[in-house]
Length: 140
Image (cartoon, rainbow, N blue to C red; front, side):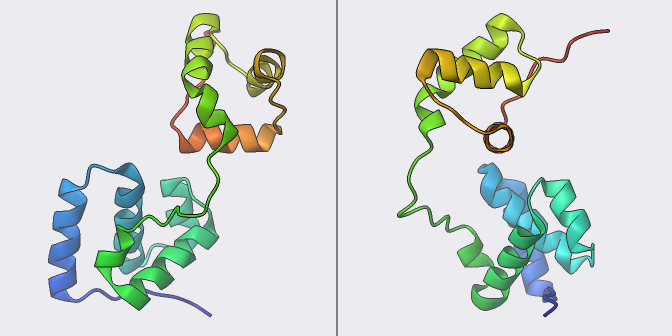
């Protein structure tokens, strides 16, 4: 089933205002998703621009269509367990900076050796992306 967004003129004004004033990046991405969907961008392109999955685009559109703009700002994390990596995030950032880490495999090794945390490459990549953790690019 295809999900689409057709904003009323009142919703367009409200969404433009919300996109200007929103400070939380997670909520802002939801607003941007709805805007792009209204502008008829393909879901694949929206997902790529916002660094989310196509399924997430569909979920947010369904959430908007069911509950409107107000519920997009409700992040429902109740019942989710926190990431084990959150407990070592500060050390992880310090290690990346101090050691000029450029590869996820180096982070995997650090986590295993220093914190006994074994994590798959794809999960570590996703964690870094979600938490805006950037590795150091090596100059040629």
